[in-house]
Length: 396
Image (cartoon, rainbow, N blue to C red; front, side, top):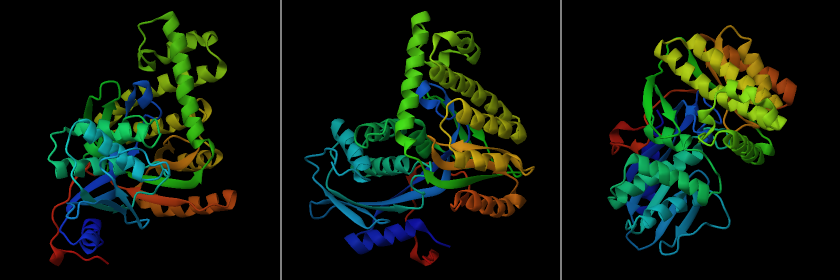
């Protein structure tokens, strides 16, 4: 069985000649609660068994080198002059983390780092959050910094905002760090309070159907939706200054004020307020272990994302429509910012292979694209990897 920790550890020793500290950071799914995080709403993410593994060690030559094994790129960093790299790319996610450590007056001594993983980039599984969080976790251990997990999460988000230029919410980093095996997080994005809910159903598997498309609107559309929500909130606050966010307004309250808003803003607010309520109801479904009701809410979310928030696309709508007509699927929806990426579904275990094959054929004949299918399991969040015993590992 392939062991990524052993593989990355070996690569580090071959390159740098010392035994490393190993850290793993998982990607994440979000079962329900889309585009609610930046509106102070609720989300329900979980860490999954797609991960990035980092190997760290103190430098013995005074140079700081970070090596991305999957792309074969090495970057040497001047710790005395940390600033965003104008060329962009993966290094900025890490430079921002170093910036935050130094801002806290934490002494970051020269170090070596090598990392690699199997989180599909661009599929909405938050490879960027895993990159930031795993790096921050390892840097904390390497520098003996007294930082809480919550502080690492904030640092990772800050890095993505200010060095990578992506104004993400807090959910991705939170799930990557705080996930637990066979559990989902019910996260309140207003105050970051959370609880874990059991999610280890024997009757359904979590399956991702990657459309392998990313339309040009993916970034601009996300930013536009945030602006539309802010515009709607501003209008509501004129009527009631006590409203802090869309979290404080019900869907019914939005609907009775329909004439206050431009049509596009009204639709965005209807979706967000409905989704915030839907996530809370979905949590009650999980507490009752009612996956059928939970799945139905996932499908309702997709309908809202497609018709009201308008962040879906023809490929994702096709996948969700086909999936939800199957009696073996409890629910399905697009996942992530939108305009491409994955559909997530709850599928009966004995039907996964047949559905993947038939849907793949239909998708190929309709769009001329290949469908990539990932069956995922829920795992623990970011943490140290135990030191490997070479006798117990097979790297094939």
